[in-house]
Image 1 (cartoon, rainbow, N blue to C red):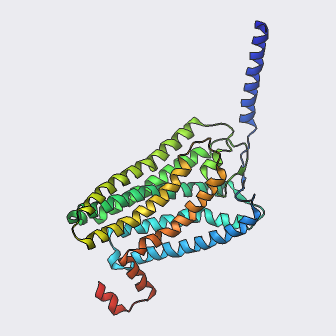
Image 2: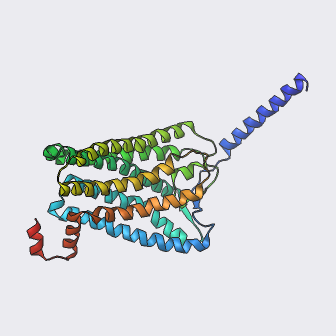
Length: 338
């Protein structure tokens, strides 16, 4: 091939690339409505998923609402652990309510749509609640560390002001990172409006982008590292010290009580972070969207539903408070326990 031919081919290639980039910039549409593909490829499965999601959602609302109510009404539960637990239950309610009602409607509808503003609110709320829970679980691990490793100073270190500040930091961190990620994601030009998910999940929406944004990808990676591996590391360090302290407790009753309170928190941490890490820290080239949907569904409804059950199974104070609330034990017996 002659030099002139090579130059001409290079020029043509350059023109084609420039034209393609121009088309990508000019031909994208500011979508006012999005279609959620969800599980529409499996119409027979949709009825089963509707029943499953509805039952889990109602159970989640009942369990977490009850837990919030008893932490407010029962004087024995006015401790830092139950303050954080009440916050966790409220986060779970908000997180699940951001996506599951839309899923339930779409599972029974032929038109699985959501407007742009609804998609933005759903994305921001889901990110905010998920991020808040990440920080809150790390805060709860620190609370358990102080309670078990430094019990004599627990009431001084974890006073009401400190607890309020720690809870506030969790909420502010979650909401600010969610606003940042959502605002950046919604500024990217989208070349389609069919979201391969049952909710406006940020990773599913970004797959519709006309071009990849280095800024958005970098910020999402940084936020994911700050809210996933770092809190997990803090939790692991806390539990190393907690386990070391528990093993030195001479009383079998004391060890069992410590294990019961920490075991519930650790179970929730494993369920929550296991699903979150598999969703947000996998390679971007991974083609497991169907699995992602199932994980998201379990992550969004099953884990929040299990949280109040996990925390009440081996916790006598929570079980007694629930019995008191439901009128299962007489008032004079309740006063004897106080």
